[in-house]
Length: 265
Image (tube, rainbow, N blue to C red; front, side, top):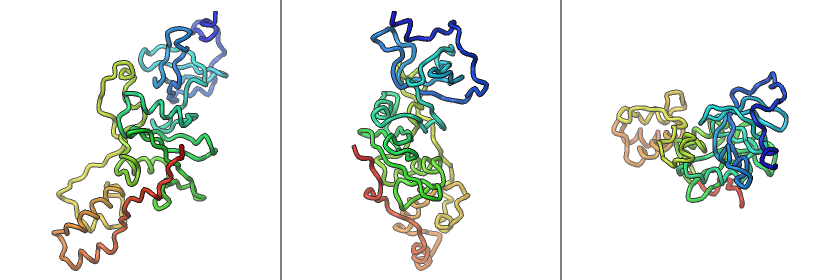
């Protein structure tokens, strides 16, 4: 029957697992498997799996829900790195995944563009799913808006997790960061924080915000926001003339939506 051919039973003799087992691989199911037209799916779209080994056109995986091992065709899954970098996910599938009920507003993923090799896109859930092109300079730095570049994708994610800076909304959590149990139950739990640094607001000093030393735990986006606010209301720790002088040295740039490369439909 078609049902037995579509599945690869665990007890069936299979090729020896590769010596280069990818024990740290996280996989996301792209389509219910097997198809509901054939039988009750073993894996549901959006479910996370632990990749044990890739064996030809199959993955040996471990369910993070049941802990049981099984096999799934490699075309039914996508690799995920850092929790938010999705490999082999096209635009339409990214929208389907982000629109799952477990993803709140601000959920996001970075994926390689299907139109141009080596170019990434940022997909963000808002009222609808928005897509932004990520470009790479000759020096290997990345950008969405040419006025602001990042040494790596992690820095880009951390920046837009602190401030929207022209995006449709703040990045709040990676796509499917909720637990697998929520895929069926629909219950909501607070999303994990991508990156946050705590500091004492009462101790904020404007001169420190405008300095070029970025190792004190205050992100670039937060610096600009606070510096802009202080330049309007005045800093009680400085006189008016010094405030004007420091304001002239501020690196603040207002978000410019026109400088963001929004992917065309």
